[in-house]
Length: 254
Ligand code: BTN
Image (cartoon, rainbow, N blue to C red; front, side, top):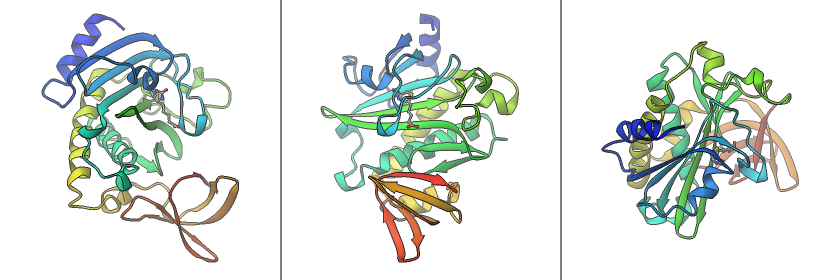
């Protein structure tokens, strides 16, 4: 990662809502660095590699060399969405990343797994970690781009996938990053206006609708058929006892 690369990124995101960029060869976690950034916000923090990348629920995030790892850090007030709808920022981010991938690689059938994964043929292409800290909203994105998954630790290749595995050639980071930032601007605007509720925008791309899933909320595990999400962004699962709304938790396909 060079200053030349930073300049390329600045060109690719020119005219968007992002006001500053920093690029690191190695960072612990771009989400952690995003808490400390003192440049004008919204800012972009990009890393070539992370030594302590974090996922949801305290999981670590593996992103080998060639993965696109970054956070967009905004003042909380930059996304004018009331508290009760803030969990939808992760859903809108998923929509944005999906839209950008399809713009750059139209042949790839990317689907969304509630609340914040992007899948191709049921394997994980990208993960999103949205955090609110000290008046900031931090949108962390890890996208497997040019990191062939055969170089990943043993457990990863069976559950993960990268763009290079699918298309067989490298994808230009800056094209993808520029497309994601533009798509985030569009999706956050749609989220603020809420003219079309999130379920209508998100459900067409849901990887779980109609499928048998297991949902774990705290220690309670239940199984049922997913019926998409509702207008608040909650996952809907049909159980024997009736339709359950899942607000947070982990979901697995069965
Ligand atoms: C998940 O799938 O649980 C979310 C993974 C999010 C990973 C990204 S990589 C860039 C940013 N920095 C982090 O430490 N995590 C996010």
